[in-house]
Image (cartoon, rainbow, N blue to C red):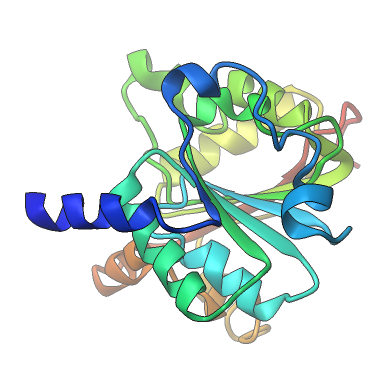
Length: 230
């Protein structure tokens, strides 16, 4: 396993669409901040982030389905990012990139109004109270996202944790933001009505695992506006 990781780390260094700043570099504004459109993607298409992307299943899957959008998968695990980086590289995809960094530093990589959409797929729910501030939908993280997400932008949370789903729903309502959709079990509530929905046509490694174990998959889509939901 260690040899495989080292091999992946070496191969990661050769991917031009995988950015791996040091911790010190990540603590200051990245050279691409505010310039992802002009310098890297070289187009004005919307930018979509997948946070805690793991293997990058959603980032690559979305990039395949929506060639008119740009996708960036973010995670701290280089050995996992290798999977998505390698797959997208071999496919010659030009609308996908990966960023290896801690998500608590994410605001150093994107400028105001630079991101159109955020996906958070199967993150660690951090159930223990002392770990609350590490939940990717904790108000501290939402404040970070607000700094670069467009006012009309949306955040998607898809996970197997009813706890995190409920926590997020409550936080969004307390903050006076808008919940657009919320489902406790998308396969029971939505699949028959919309089987071609992106929620079903792209499955992460963990989603497939949880489905095999009979777990319900939850989903919530919300905005970070300051107006209460209607």
